[in-house]
Image 1: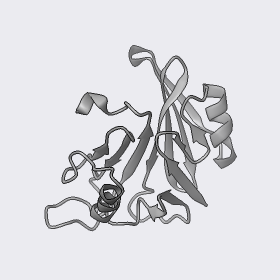
Image 2: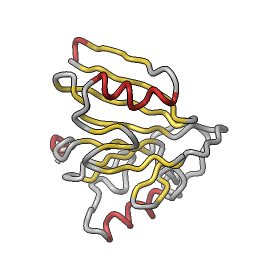
Image 3: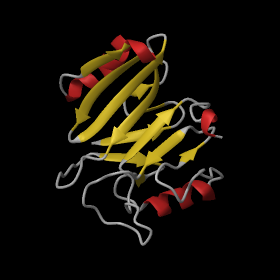
Image 4: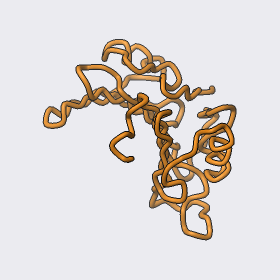
Length: 160
């Protein structure tokens, strides 16, 4: 299965702006989703797994989907599911190569050499953080990303 990232609109079947019920319906074909509410942060998360790819749907405003985060399956776990951004598999393509491709298309990432690069405006965020045994660059960062988040156009404005 392919999960297409379509920043700033959504990921796979989940679209930004969906209600909780719509988000649950979108991820339910993969199995029973788990819903968590954190009243102190006015945050609801819907967690699911597509094959072994972790999916977290964030509802941060008025019970509305504001972001979708997908997680690499983890060390020793295989998946036939691909998370695709402009045809590149986010979890199998070297992070530096993926960021170069974005820059070539006029979408330069901030903090491109760090653990948590993001593309403002497109509101696409990546993570290289992991304590697992993975292939690493000379600087010690994982070669590939371990998560990707698609948010609305101003999702990362606070980091600028």
